[in-house]
Image (cartoon, rainbow, N blue to C red; front, top):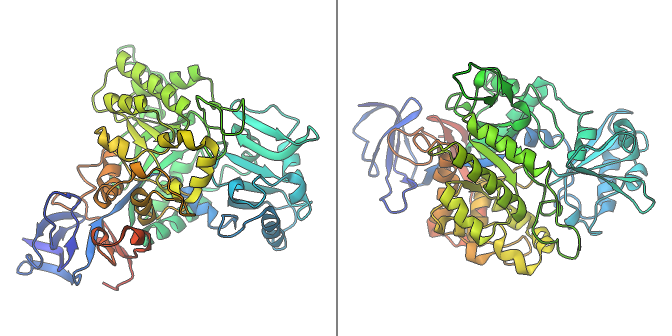
Length: 547
């Protein structure tokens, strides 16, 4: 056999913890076609042979829930994360600096502020932003994506206080009874309609910037959690941007797209065919190729845990009467899930609060009873608060939860503060799902938090907040389980386990070379591991080794 490429003298982690590791891989085109012991393919003909000098190699990482285009956009916005600002005063100072270099009347956008991490423990107000930006409209995007803060100039353009607030949203009021600049959940539509849709060329630029960063972090595949518009955005040509980015060579990682349910509609059909709630021409889950294709449809049930808007059975800690809310009437939510299921979609529903998780499971159970379908792999995105009885239901129904361990270190204190110590046991389960026989993917929800998979693997294993506070130690995974989550677990969540997720013949040649063996180091050092090279489809798309 003649190989296009042989990788020799390496330590390949095949993603089969019970099986032996291999030391050599033969590649033809974009596929792995042979594996062998170290240097075991040395006698075969190959166009190119690379000696990896014993380095540790894992399957390409797959982020099962991220917002790629939105992340790329944040790279050109004012950074307001906790590493950049620690108080409202510093937020205002950062906006002042940007105003100074922004043309009069143009928008100033800040990204990833977290009121829980600001010294004042609250959101900025329009009055504070007005002191440095009386003429420039200012929009601050909360790290959760579930809030936005505006100055008065932006509120004036959005006609806050003059127009009706969309269902599932809140315009917050100050002590004077007037809007104070904070928009919750669907109320963000009022301002985002002024900034969206983006130009296709801008979205392509965003995707290119995101691709470059993903490859530096070992991400070879990701699942985009909502194209077409979510939480007040509207991007009706977003798929065109992905296609152009792929054509132009700027989309350099594989992407599974979740179509926003807002893009679906009833489609005329023959009387012999069932009702169709889908994209034009009946497109649904599975259409596309190994680089770009449709996965689930994305539906929002509720809000945010750190923002205390997720739908809970019990009130939030220290806030009697506040147990969050749904983003639409439950009847509407259940109707959308049923219609999408009946039309052949894999359904991915955002549900964080335990009341929302239970309601989504009710809808899935009804849909499967009325229209049985084997191997549907419906998902609950985040599944942040999950009661033991609902873990059992998830297993019984064949649902896939998609929690984010990355939340533990970055926003863990805020989550624990919202629910209190008595309910922490139900928060962002990981091991409980595996113990119940449930598939567990790895994901970040980037740009909500930093998205490097090695940081996610670190959090899956260590279960500690950024301040060193134990989170749910009983939910900690082994290093093998954590690697599997970000490889085979994520592949399975997207119906891709036959072509991704492990190093074996027939799989796509998507690989990551690391500077250390993750299975042989102190768990505290997992997050400090460096990606040395990233291969996608048999080509090194990132290479710090000059291979």
